[in-house]
Structures are given as C-alpha cells and as structure tokens.
Length: 151
Image: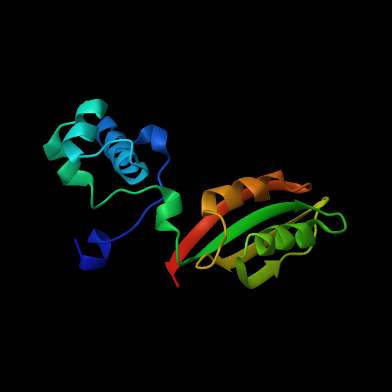
C-alpha cells in the first residue's frame, strides 16, 4: 500500500461505522463540551475501553470538525426557476462562507446541475448547519458534498 493510500480521507455514513468508532467520537464530544471531566469518566459512561478510545481518537472526528478551514465542493440539482442559484449563494454568504467557484450546467427537463466550491475558514456557523440551510432553500432538489481540500 502506498503512502497516499494509507493517508486518505473518506466521508462515511455513521450508521455503517463499528460501535467502538461511534463511541470514540461521542467520548471526544463529551470531553469537548465538558460533559465529562476526564477520559476515564467519559469512556466509562460510554462503556468503551480506554484502549479502544486511544486506538481511534486521533483518526476519527465529526464532519463539521474536519471541514473547518477547508475548501468544500458541493453539487446541487436545482429547479430551473428564477433566483434559486442566487438563494443558494446568498445562504452561503449569509453565514460568511466564501464562494470560490460556481459552475452551472444548462437546464434540462426543468432542473440544472450546479457545483459550488466554498472556503469555510471564516464561516459564522459550522458546515453541518450550513448544509442543513442549503437543503432547505426553495428549489434545491438535491445537494451533496462532492469533496474537500485543505485551504
């Protein structure tokens, strides 16, 4: 296995992760929020062994944490009606996201594909909150994270 294969990052849905990894993420969140004072206290409450926690702690983190100070590329399926792309861009701008690129295809059968790359460094909300807002924009039929890169 090459070095680049060993150091890859993947977006994986939480429901397919093993319990030890899910619990490790929850332990890290408990410690960050102050819900537990020590690692021992947090792993006991989550019924996770300390060795499992230490095995995974440096390799797992919530998506919003991984997306800070990154360039995130989003792909949209938008209804072909006036102002939809503008509403998407205003939503990003409203949370202090910096739009780096916009690429929109020609509308076909009432919908258009659009790809938007944003820089997340100075956003006023975490990326998950922004993604939730974007999904709610009137005219957004589908939205997916296409990829991430270091800013």
